[in-house]
Image (cartoon, rainbow, N blue to C red; front, side, top):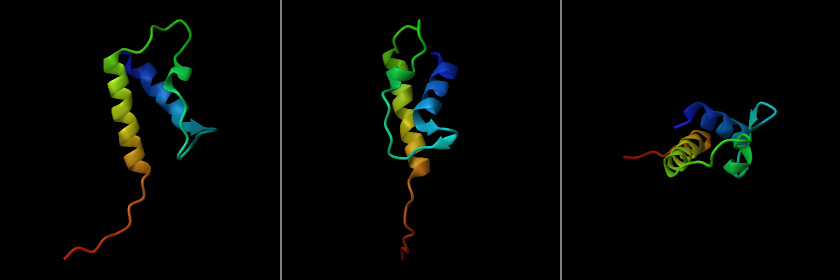
Length: 67
């Protein structure tokens, strides 16, 4: 897997001018470097997992008192 390239693609898709953009979606294929082979299913699964992890970090959950 081309992990370093994929992480760079994710960074470009989620950030603009060094700031994280919430609720903005770019097609990941748009950031695939020219001349690279298309992403494999394993790489697409990794991208989905990483995007989910990043969205969880950005989600603001309200405090809930349980008990």
